[in-house]
Figure 1 (spheres, rainbow, N blue to C red):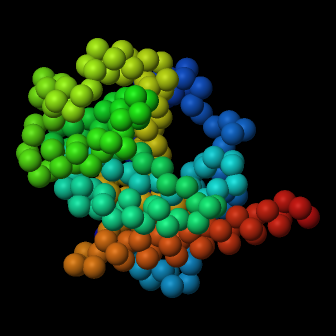
Figure 2: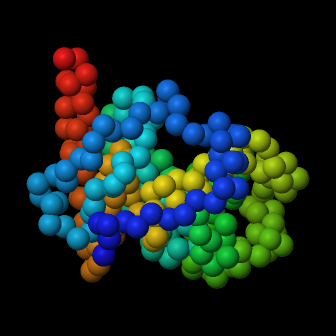
Length: 237
């Protein structure tokens, strides 16, 4: 069950300094909701959704942002992946889905470097499900660097290019930002979906839990859209 109190995690000075030097603190490109949004009426007594306090900034691009916090070594994330792919294809034009690798490794796999490096190489879409399957179905020990390199090489990944891309300034910035987001959003379990920096939803228990998650997120998108319209109307006054 989600904890609506959401006790704040500590952020280390080292992490703060890295984020500041990378230029990742709030900027004009991001917009924070003005107030804590109320849950949509159908979800107000739902133990699997909460409002975020504090709300988190989102990109100021006119779209409702849905984040999926995940980890490659998480079996629940692996089970959810095929359904999230299907659900994402049906999203309306004013909604965007972004995946965020969570801070804590599961099965020893540090998801952020792997995710952002493959994304930069144009291989994320091709290999994402394969990584989930290797870690959670085939029990490949991808948390071991040598095993990971061997596995990546078998998938046709140029290991030298992979290492060079991962060391790049832009990828290190993305890794640092993902880690900060896990702290700011107080992510304690995955998969977790966050709508527009306002609401968080987890997978309900039971056989229909995954389908119910998407139904809940759809409701939260409606609620976020209403909040955006209210804020926009207030700004015009």
